[in-house]
Figure 1 (cartoon, rainbow, N blue to C red):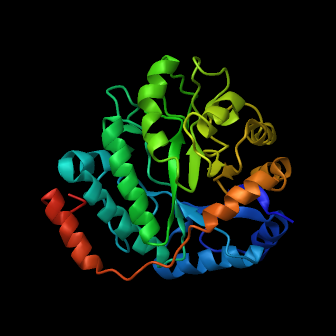
Figure 2 (figure 1 turned 90 degrees about the vertical axis):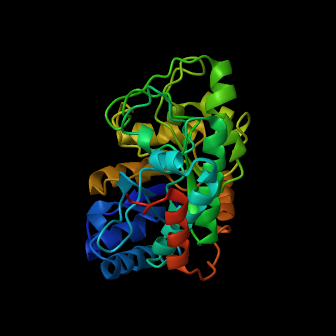
Figure 3 (figure 1 turned 180 degrees about the vertical axis):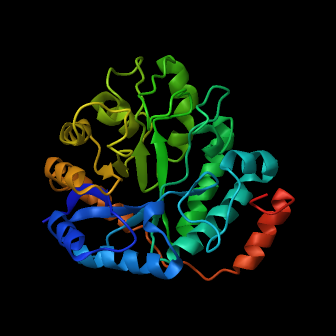
Length: 334
């Protein structure tokens, strides 16, 4: 039987017997890790292995390791990074090489822990009114710059054995509200959105996995993108993304209604997998019940995504870090 159409978080640093039993029965397609799950490399590698053991297969384990303000791994055990937008500004024309180096090094750190998917890169375009929570996380201020830097970032992750998760489709850069707290409404017309905001995602539509935006675009649909069949259709057809499409965290306050209703609506709209992040047992039970098993089309896309996992070739991390420092004319975290 296919796995559940859900990606779930876990509660803490260790997987207890009761939580492991829940995951065995729920059988989520994958897992996602947060700062609450991280103490040190030994502990984290053990948790990753225990999560996979709970479902009896090599389930994907995701993390948000963009670097900069969104980083679940940090000092003293892992590298610190500039915010992506600051790196793009400092690197200039060398941006693509700098982002390949950055994410190849991040991939090496993740792969050493058994983590095989990273919720990056963001292909949202930084604009003058982009919300401050998102703007520093963008990889540039034009569609062409973002597409080039994001492509390099994705290649760096894939070369290191880590699947990239492209986000946030169909484009979050014009949002002036933090979707963790409220629903952003982007009032731009459809032609401008198509020509500008969607362009980096079209350029990256061949990537194996992607994440939706909890944003409403009145010119395109009444519902937020995650819950909108017309917008998921646009992602599949006009943007051309055919990989595994997951929701952003289904528990974010941008969405209204109960988690069961949200989960069912996202899948009915055309998302493949529901992402739930906070590790709260009652919420996870509601999501898993509403999500059910992967449908055949989603199961095929999931299998195709996992087939992109590869064994990374050895690298000289010091040499790559030194090259990145030279490109940026200073350490990557300065």
